[in-house]
Image (tube, rainbow, N blue to C red):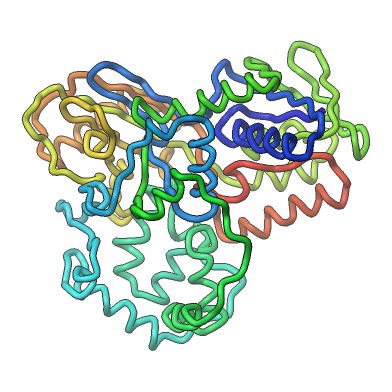
Length: 455
């Protein structure tokens, strides 16, 4: 018997793959999934009406890399292929991504031609960043912040206006704190091994690729051939965890919602006791924890305080999400994915996503404003209200996009401690956590975004 802690996408996916591996090995595995709330899907939540969809968390999925292709394989297996809406390279949401600098919106280059042209707010064509990399000596380092790395290799403007806002968009974090291994591990390794990114790139072009080729579903193959930028799901991304949940139920996984685990007791190397809030105990042979690191820390605190401390050291940030719907049919925005705001602008918002351009079946104009992140408490204090965040969002959107209309409908959600921060030293910390588990022979596996990055 095994238990999965957490019914977010990480926990549901773990159940899916455990079932798949169990089917292939012909073992008789009994699985429990325990979720503290009455909802599966974690931060993925969609508000659907006949006119719009408000995504309160993620809205698109990247198809790139092994993880992205595996996800597409899973989506096809779940029967969701016909609901997928891809954003291809020629789509405005793929071509048009903007940053807000000095009270102006600037379009970031999206083609090879654009790299050779001068694009504000950059003072030179981006090709000069490659010259900067070629002439710059490298530092021998075990890790570095992504800001320091990019500034060193490509210059301060790239770090300030390209990478810093991108980190805000991906993990609502500060590029001056986030590990370069989070987003640019290969580029960092090229610098450390070959002395520069361009040199490393050139050498990689002549190196042979090894490893097992992933077996691709028709959907994954189509995403590769058509070079999808990202994709979403018609009717809301929530359909994905809903389908996963139904799949687990259909395959006899015991789904325990509104079930809060208060403590984990490791009896021996092959037995774990989960103490439930109701007073019940569940004994299993193995635990798969997909809950945030700080939640797991409280469960193992009594028996393994050293492990709990290291888990607590992984920082998380809070993000405010304000969804806005404008019923007017007149165009309020130019077609684009949206815009991000570099931290040097000292803005209360991280960026705005143009959902009515990125997502299908939207009438009127739908925008999502992201606020706070690494700077949430600094900008809004400890006890901000939904009304305050709404007012700030409407004011910023009105000023930046010159929208005079009042929203027809809106939704505000404060996602408390929702995104882990992969700060410098994060991967060494995760290795330390996993080494502790291995050394103490604890029957627990750590999965989810707390440890291995978001995709």
